[in-house]
Image 1: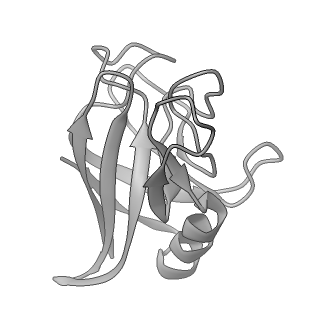
Image 2 (image 1 turned 90 degrees about the horizontal axis):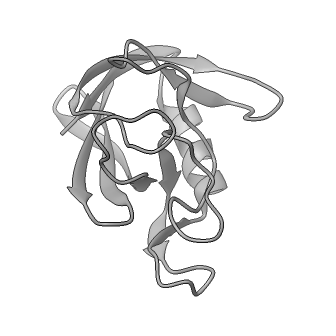
Length: 136
């Protein structure tokens, strides 16, 4: 199993599509939102394109999340529940937020992801304890 995120960089956020692949066969697809590209600055940027190892993890703040390993010059990068990457409310400091669809949920003019909990539940169901993440 592996995941592929294909992204589009916008001024205020980075939007993407995450595909869970079983070999060459897609088994699940969802949306992602991240911070905009700001030269890989900690807390202000999405992560660079690349291939990363990912493990399932758990914490009080982010139950049942995934930890992205070996991100150049970064640590603490997760895939976790959240809706907002820009505007008055931001749920990420560099992490990847999955969702079922894109929508301006809070009416601030920025793209958000909806039904993030549902997307994370599916990812936890489909993905093994460790896998490769391809960020394009």
